[in-house]
Length: 296
Image (cartoon, rainbow, N blue to C red):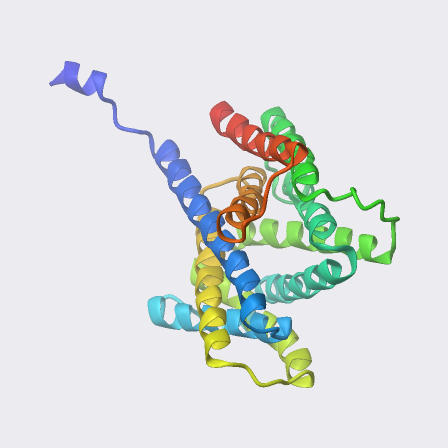
């Protein structure tokens, strides 16, 4: 019995929690990828106001929390807890800002600038909650960002810097703040309440422009929006759960797999083709995330 136990030791709690966090984060990346691909498919069904799509996303998230976590969800804390409120408000504003940068900078450049939150969040976590910024995470983050720049052809159009580039950096800083705040809030709040903060405040922010730009929506478009909202809610909730166990830098780096998944989905479902430099970018993203995971 002793020999058998020695040959097959039980995983330590820390290793088990880390594996749980990675699993939730991978579920999150898969769900976010599906969400973006469905939003893209929605554009082929009907042109729908992106603010309405966001409202559907947040309403579905609140419905998910009320259904699954009705005993754990503490709605009054969204008002009582200032940090929950700041998580929700900043999270909602980053959604709005990201959509604006996509419109004015293009998806590739906007995505590249937004994903610099990987580096910002790691640095904020060091300053705000004392996490270690390990060399493996730095190397993986730099490789991932370089790969993303190639994959999205972020600067291939020769566009010059503008105020929307500054907005993109601001959005990235906001996203980094949200991730660190999620990590902090796990000390006092249930994951469902942390997730609901974004849904509640994000809905309040997006509801006004959605009402100001009304329009008839076909039944098929509603169905696609609803499905996209479900995947978005699952992705956001899984990410929130993952940050119970993962450092901010490592968790945010795993989210770099989302643009890679979107590119692969574009090739499979929308007949897109990869150029050599885009393939090199995809390889760099995979190498950066894999290197960090193996070093762990």
